[in-house]
Length: 640
Image 1 (cartoon, one colour):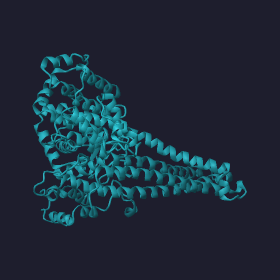
Image 2 (spheres, rainbow, N blue to C red):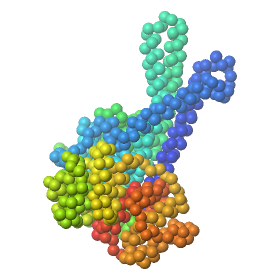
Image 3 (cartoon, rainbow, N blue to C red):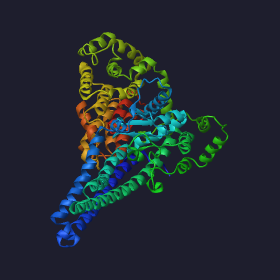
Image 4 (cartoon, one colour):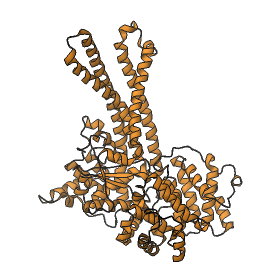
């Protein structure tokens, strides 16, 4: 069976989100009815024994039902708002600390290098990295709402007990969750289950309160009756709430197991090294993946690489298939091979040398297809060429240049340097003179002197990868600082009264990932192309003119590209002579509202334009990556 593609997995994640919301609402209705039933028996004497269905629509019943719905809604809403900060908020919730990009710790540098290689190879901004210092178990998770705002959290046990290949397998597994849209689903699950848990927590509170008050008021019959009633309500609500949580976690676990199996398979596809993720899982089986230092282990169970909490009814509530089953699903016979290696290891040897094993011959770390026929097929994938490109690029970057990208000042100056690197020195000075003096946002000649030679020496192909490496530092800017950077970039772009393809790509990239809407999920607004035809007209007009040699060729190329979308005839949407930057941004915002299954055709139509002359230059591909990025479709770098 063919491995599902990026767009199919995105559509599946959205369907799962809708299903979970439906099941959550169903659970709310059932819990409300159960609590109303308790209320009915509690007040039956006051309501003359009327049937339940009549009591339910009485003032008592309606007030009870409304109270339950409000309590559940408040519980979910409070957690939802708490998690609105995205992945960084989840990381802080479990007590993880950010890893300094310039860390000197060998294990942390190993993790950072693996993540950077995979990010560059896949075309996504480098995720922010966090570590749970006090967790000895082997585990990891990603959190966030969009690929561009993802954070990755790894336990100390994972980076110290796993070999590079094994850690690469875990990182590949987590990147699969980034590509597949699982992060958004996982964060929302935490909020939804918190609401259901609210009823059980109230029941627990009433139960404790009844016992506490009983110690002081047993001499009074009236107080004794109140105590008994409070205890009965507490027990009833406690049981109802936690039965609801049980079934909620049952649904959560079923969905999670399916997606964990898919992520395991994707990791093997990315790394082309089943021994990597297989060895990591094998070590979890020998040791542990539990999170013992956070009170949120149960909440995080469905998000983690391995089980994070010890649970009863493990066969039903486990968010992951059994370890042996996961290893055997990766490759038949892999478990026996790993066990054999362990037996052959001398006592006292580090297990990491026993389970790493050699890579299959002819592989470089990440999988890839040498026969990708359309650009949409490359979205959300990592090829061996892309990984080789990433490794080679990182090796060629001078350490001074690379370390500057990890600082706010260096990342800001990088944006300026990319806009002036191809200009003559006197013109560079004129452009930088447009910026106002500022300790952070003003031109800093000493930093630019370290950035410009590398940009000029490595050429255009280094620009977007360098920007992706700088994204963790740029995300540290507060909203006012982000606005200041955007204004300065716009000032440099407008200096010559024209906009190049790269300038268009850079400003749009920064707007998407640092603007007010950064990190927010774009809901599906369109399930047909008809509603976005003006947007397609603008986009394909720009792409056709970028890919053609002259106006005549551009017109013919445009007609070919638009033909698959215009149902009423191509003449209704003629090629446009000019598309402004603002129009392009509005266009890409509109197209991002398409259903995931409609986006591949847009990517391929743009790809048809830039491959028209059988040559793709760097600037054309940068524009292509801009389109894909704005549609939340990570595209690997150009490797040829």
